[in-house]
Image (cartoon, rainbow, N blue to C red; front, side, top):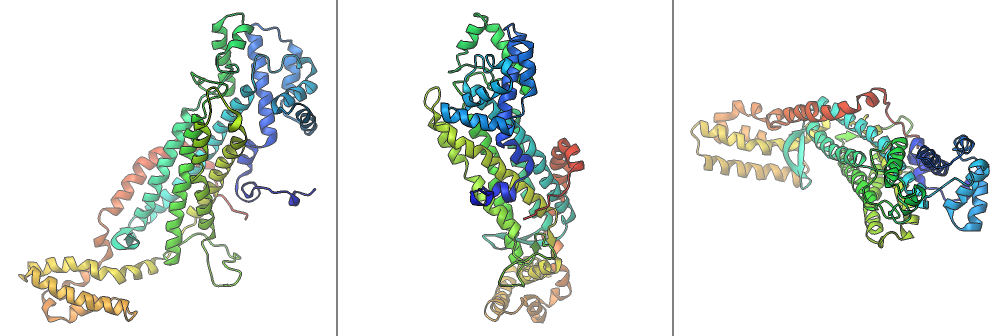
Length: 482
C-alpha cells in the first residue's frame, strides 16, 4: 500500500519541521524507552543490584530500535495487547544477556511518562529559539518604521495616528508574553523518575531491602542522566496531567497571538498598506490572476485557531483522571501532545518567513492619512484661532459645518477629503490661513510613538533576546516549500 492510500496529517506532510517530527516519531519514542531502561539498569547496578556488565553492554549497543525490532514488537503486542511489554520482549531479543533485567522494578509509566517529559523538554527547547527569531524580525521591523505615521484604528474605524513601528511593537509585546510563559514551564519541568505502580516506591523499596535512601539516590542518578533538575515530589502511577495542562496553556496561547497578528496583516493587505512576502511565480488565485492573497498569514491564522483551542482537551484529560490513574489519558495524549508542538512549530516557521519579509507601501499609507487627517487637525485649528482672539465656540460651529460638507463629499460623492481647502476658502479662518499646512504634518499627531518603540525594543526586548544570542546569530529565515 502506498503512502498516498493512507491518511497523513498535513502537519507532517506540509507544515512542521523535520526536527519536530523526529522528536515525536515512533523510532524516537521506542528508542527513548530503551534508553530509559539502560539508565535504570545502570543506576540499579551502581546502587548494588546484581546486573551483569554484558547485559548493560548489549542494552547500550541496541538503544536505537531497528525496523526489524519494530516488527518483533508488533508481533508481541498482537499477542500481549500491551505496547510496553511488547518492547520489553523485543529489547530482550536484541540484548539477550539483559532479558531478565530489563524494566526491573519499573511500571509501564516509568518509560511512557518519563519519555513524554523528555519529549516535552526537547520540543520546548526547539520552539523557544524559533519564537525568539520571530520577535527579532519584528524588533528590527519596528525600529525601522518607528517614525512612519499610520492610521490607528479603534473599532476598525480611523483613530489617532500611531506609527507602523508602534503597531509592530504591540505584536512583539504579545509574543514576548508567550516567550516568557513558555520559558517558565520549560524551567519548571521535572522528571517522574522511578516511583512504582502508584507512586509509593514500594517495589524499589523491596529491591533495595528497605533502604529508602537508595531510592532517593536512584532518582538523583536518573535525573542527572536525563537532564532534569529533580523529580516531582508526588507521583501516582503517572506524573500529574496538570503538567501537560500547564505546558499546553503556555504553548497554545501562541496560537491565539499568531492568529491576532496575522489578522492585522490580512486587514492591512486589504487596505494595501502592508503585504506579506509574495514570490515571483506565486499564484494568488486560480481564477483571478491579479490577486495577491495573504495565503501565508491565512495559513498561520488557521493553524493558530487550532492550537489555541487545544487546552480544552488537556483540561478534560487532567480533570477526568481518577485517583491514582485511569487509562483514558493515553490515546488522547498520543495525539494532543505531538499535535500541540507540531502546530506551534508550523506556526513559528511561517511567522518567521512572513515577519522577515513584510512589505510596506508608504504612499498608500500617506493617502489614507490624508483622507482622515483634516478631521484630526480641527482641534489644532481651534486652538490657533483662540490665540488670535476668535471665540472657541464660534470657531467650533464653523468647523462643524465645513466638516459635514467635506464628509458628504467623501461618503456620498466618493471624493477625497477637501476640508482644509474649504477652511482656506472661508473668510472666518483667514487669521490662520498661513498656518494651516504646518498643522497637518502627520508627525505632529503620532505622539510619543517613536520613543515608545525605541525604549521597548532596545530595552526589554533586547535584554530578552540576549539569552538567545547564539542561536539567533546562526539562524536563517524559514523557507516555506508548500
